[in-house]
Every structure is written in C-alpha cells, then in structure tokens.
Length: 306
Ligand code: COA
Image (cartoon, rainbow, N blue to C red; front, side, top):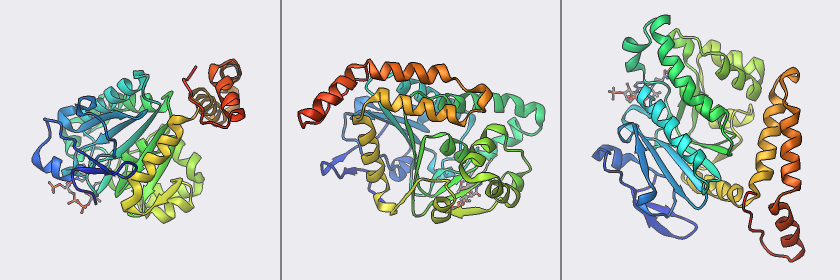
C-alpha cells in the first residue's frame, strides 16, 4: 500500500524508519504509521519484531514479523509488554496505536511453530500462557487510550490484542477470526469475556464453534470493530483519530476510560470510589479551567493533563 518512506498526509512529508535490527525483507514490507519525527525516538524489541515510535503525543507499537503475518512468538509478547510499559511511563505519550507491519496482517495469532516446544500439553503451556497473559494484562489495565489499527488478518491472539484496545479501526481488507477449534485449544476467559462483551454470546458461539473468518463489513455490523476505512486511508484516519484524542483533556479521557471499565465490571466488583475520585480530579484540574477559558476566549485549549 505505501512505500517504505511513509507519507504524512497532514504535512505532505516523507518519513524514513529503519531500525538497524530489521532484515531487508522486513524493511521492504514495513508500513509504519506516519509520524514525522526523529529516528532517535524509535526503539525496537524482540530482535526488531516489535517496533516502538513516539511523536506528536502519539505512541505507536508495530508488530513486525510480516513473513509470518505478524504471528506472535513469546519473545514478541515480551517485547510488546516492554514497549507498552515504556509508552505508559512516557509523559509525552497521550494515546497509543497498535498496528501490524506489512500489508497482510495485524497479527495472525500466536506463532504456531513454537507450540510443539512450548505449548504441546497443559503443563508446558502453563508457562507460555502465564508469560503472554502478563503482557496482555498490561494492555487490559492501560491507563492511556489505545487504538488497534487493523488491516488484513486479525486472528487468535491478534483478536485478543485488538479486543483489549479501547477502539478498533479496520481497513476494508480486514479478516477476523479465532481458529481455536481448528487447532484444538481453549481460548481462555479474558479473550472470550471481551468477545462476548463486544459481539454478544450468540455471535461469540458462532465464531468459536466454526473457527470462521469474517470480513471488516461483518465485523463492523456485529460491533467487533468501530469503524471501517478504505484500506489506503487506514493509517491516516487512525492518526487523525489519535491526534484528536491526544489534544483533548487527558484527565477527562481517563475519567471516561475508568468509568466505562467499571460499567463493564460485575456490579459487586465495581470501584465506585475510583469513579468519584477521577471526577473530583477533573473538576479541580487546571485543564478544566483552561477548557472553560479557551471556550470563552474562542481559542483552542492547551491541555496539560493536570
Ligand atoms: N504461526 C506461525 N506461522 C504463521 C502463522 C502463525 N500463526 N500465521 C502465518 N504463518 C506463516 C505461515 O506458516 C507461512 O510460513 P512459510 O512462508 O514458512 O510457509 C507464512 O506465515 C505465510 O503464511 P501463509 O499461510 O502462506 O499466508 P496466507 O496469506 O495464505 O494465509 C493466514 C495467512 C494467516 C490465513 C494463514 O497463515 C493462517 O491460517 N495462519 C494461522 C492462523 C491461526 O491459526 N492463528 C491462531 C493461532 S493460535
């Protein structure tokens, strides 16, 4: 879809992004969301298979294993966790985009070639599951807004990641599925909880029992994704959305994030005190004052997150 030099539509400039650990094939296939920022801000993990970039208040994590349709090895899960922690702790980052390299996949699931060694039975699988679940837990508890930017295949563990993001934006060429029944594995509580909460129990059963793949149009219709964008416009549209979020008041977004998460908890487990506290933080914030003043002065507010 795009050349390796990636055009920033908002500014019309080209960026260049080549972490030293990438192979030539990876470089050829890589499509990195368009952030026109210094290469010194780029980092990579898991031997270049997880890429991280920061700019304009937006952090981007790219699953970069395009030869395997961005299938996730255990090393990639761990690198993913490291990138999430780093972006979480970076005060410049107000929103995080998750995306896949190349034009074929977001993530095609866990790397099945590792299964024989590390997931061949329940005992072996325990360690693998514990480690990969720990990285996904970071995303589940993420304090900043997250957007999954999906093109091509989004399968199995890729669906777990996408469903944990706050918002899912898909290209028209998206393909979604959870082929656990085709492999003989159980998908687990957290993944199915999120699936049921997004699409309802009936569609969840259909998807799980058949192992079928659905396209972006159907995914939009059943609530699995929030917006479908023409494939060539996906990155630009996702960046635009991220930029909108990053210029809004961080505490107000945090309040929405906390409150929506609590709405999804079982009533007995809801942390109403957390909701009350973030409400107080918002009302007492400099940003609320700035928001009011900017409105009255007919100018754009400059929010600081405090
Ligand atoms: N784990 C390991 N390798 C994978 C993979 C996965 N999840 N998904 C794709 N690959 C590898 C393929 O084995 C192939 O490797 P090869 O070039 O050495 O033969 C390469 O990626 C390209 O895949 P291919 O099947 O040729 O591409 P495709 O475009 O025709 O199909 C998929 C893509 C994703 C539909 C198909 O590869 C697939 O079904 N993968 C498995 C998906 C899955 O079951 N995920 C859940 C895991 S829990």
